[in-house]
Image (cartoon, rainbow, N blue to C red):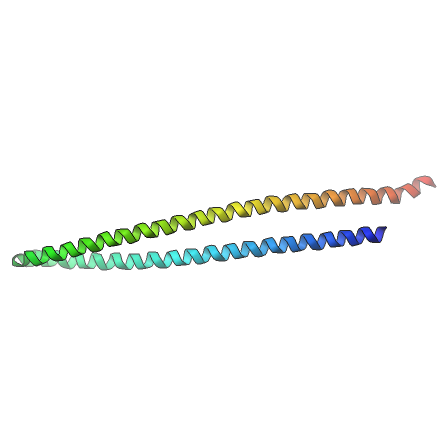
Length: 151
């Protein structure tokens, strides 16, 4: 009977170890996925910043030409119109990036919530194991102390 209990406890310990390892693996996978998403967002933000820099350079050139050459006002107005379109397009891209950042943030929240649920489940399972071990040790203790009381 004692060897059966030991075997049962050994199996239970192996099961708990594998559950803990699974949880760690899942957490590592979630962390890796979130890091990848942040890397993609950072790349997109970098591209948007480059585009904004190019637009700012163009606007500066347009302003210089307007100040120096008043007889080219008609052509400068066309350029300003194109620059405004580019600024609008840049704003659209920025809004898209904001949406992506929001999606990533929501993903992070979801991962945190899932991690918290997993933590609660793991704590419950550990408590169950402790309760089982406590009951088993009490039973063993009664069995071991019962012969002592008989003598």
